[in-house]
Every structure is written in structure tokens, then in C-alpha cells.
Image (cartoon, rainbow, N blue to C red):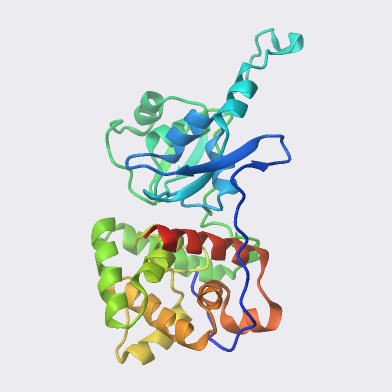
Amino acid sequence: MAPVLPPATVPPTVDLPETAPVLATHDDRRWTRHTVRPGETLFGISMRHGVDVATLVRRNDLGSRRMIMTGEVLEVPLRGAARATAARPASRSSSRPVTKTRDPGSVHLVRPGDTLSGIAAESGTTVARLAKLNGISPSDPLAVGRRLRVPGTAARSTSPRFDENTFEGRDYPRAVVAAAERNRRALAGREVPSRDAVRAMIVRTARAHGVDPRLALAIGYQESGWDQRQVSVANAVGVMQVVPSTVEWTSQLAGRRLDPLETQDNITSGVVLLRVLTRSADTRAEAIAGYYQGLASVQQHGLYPDTRRYLRRVERLRRSM
């Protein structure tokens, strides 16, 4: 999310530790690296490596949007370890059938990169049942922001709810959350460019403003998955997840009023902010941290843990662009 405050001087470069090729974790699994191939999904990778999607998301700092790109490097459990876990015999106490009490279900807010198969797997149901429950075809594309009915005891939504005011451990005023909901509804009814079109728009805009296109692409992808319909409870809007105060400030720099609900203006606002950050910061890492946390905050408080995760994620994405 783009910061509220304009950039300022920042502290020295933050070192980014490299991940070891094979790692041990608290659950005794050993992890290795996997390069995403064309057509691969998180669900497919999770099935092959014997791990649930939620664990992959946490391990790789993917955030709520759960999107991956061809060429991106993910940490996954070693297949041998996964097979050993899967082959472990069940205990005698678990040999008797267990009767589950099903709840009436819940609602899942569709995020960028979500698929019916992935949602079904996480919710302990089938694609056919999920499609039937929502009156859609299994082959229908899922619109980001759509609410799906999800059956079963495992069903839960990890997406931010717009009737709550807390996200990523921070509380936001009800007025901000209400404005975010209005923007989300407005964007849900608009035609927005495809992700390929958004990618081209980011590259064009970055070049026009003297910003590294790979950095702009990585920021945009981390923020929204190049999805203009994304709106957070903090009222960070669109592709570049810019908040109203940032848009007002970047509008002055751009020399015209920018509308964050318009895709090109949204991208322009984010890229103009990146231009200032990259020229004000001593390093690229500082600029990236500033986009998320605000350079004034970075200067006063250092990097928050979530900022460090954000920084690592953006750097990995930039290398894959």
C-alpha cells in the first residue's frame, strides 16, 4: 500500500538475506526451491509437494492475493519429505470413522489468482459442488471481489472483510472503511483492462517517468496482482494501491487531477510516487520500503517486520520480470 506521507531521507541499506537451497523448519519439513513454470498454479504445486496452499502462501510471503508468475522462485517442501509424511500410517485411535458436524457454510471473497479448484481444495469440497452451490459453471472465470458461498467445516475466508476495520494488524476509522467499500463497489461495476493490458500500461508509464519498468511491475504485482478492482480496507485503491492523500499529492506533481478509479491515472499516481522515492532514497531497497511504509516512518522507526517481508517479495518479483 502506498504511504500517506511524502518521502523523506531514509536510513542505510537493508540487507536481504538469501534463502538457503534446502532449509529445515519447525515442523521438521525440509524445503527447497521451485521455479514456477507456465500454467502452474499454487494449488497444483501444493498437491505435488504434499503441502496445503495456506502454508505455501505463508512460507513465500504471498499475501492475500495468492498470485504467482512464471519464472518466480518459490520455497516448497522436498518431495521425499512430503512422501514420507503422506506414507506415515494412521494411528489406531484414528482408524474408526469420524462423524463431522457441518456448519451451514461461509462466504469467500474472491482474490486475484483464486480458482474454483483452489478454493474447493482449501474448503474441503469439490469443484462441482462449489460451482453448483453458487450457480456457476466450473469453467466460468471468477471475478475478483465476488462473494462465493463455501460449504463445510473447513470453509473460512482469509480476505479482509469490509465490515471490519482491521487489516494487517492495523485499525482504520470506520469512515475510511466505508469509503473503501464505496470504491470497491464502484470498481466492481466498471470495465477494467486485462492484466496483460495493465502490464503494458505500467511499462509505458514507468518509461515515460524515468522509472525502472521492472520495479514498477513488481510493485504493482505485489500490491494488487495488476488488478484495478482491488481495494483494501485502508482505502488503498487499484493497481498501485494508492490512498487518497497520495493521489492528491501525486496529482500536484503530475500537473493534473488524477482519479484513482481510472486505471491509467492509478498507475500514473503510483509511478510518480516511485519516481520521487527512487530519487530521494539512497538505495532501491529504501525506495521499495518507502512505498509500503513511508520513508518518513522508515527514517524514524526503521523497517517493520511486514515491511521486510514486503521488501523481499518485491525484490524477488523484480528479478522475475
